Image (cartoon, rainbow, N blue to C red; front, side, top):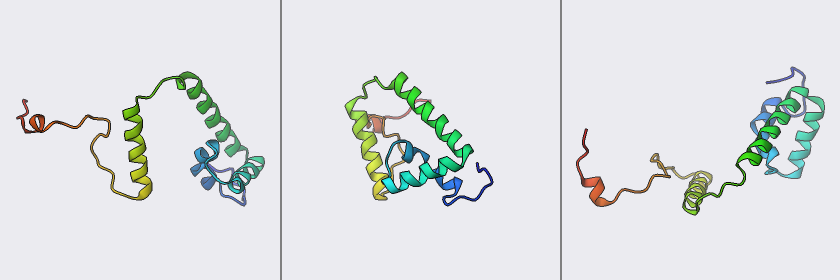
Length: 109
């Protein structure tokens, strides 16, 4: 999406990092750059408003559910692997590991 007008910060860069801005996970200087872009680019401002509304709706509807501790630790472990650049296993991280007896047992069709 682009309004077709030249900006100091390209629309694609703004949209690529929109959730970082929404979650305030960027330095203040970057936030200022986004705010300036929104002042002059109505399509990006509209997209920001939509994503902000969705985020508020999800928080209101789902924000009270407790997350099991083991699931949280598995997800956080996977995030750390990704951030460190390590290879992430392709297996489902939420699945319980099979015991040696289960993995040795023949599978029925």
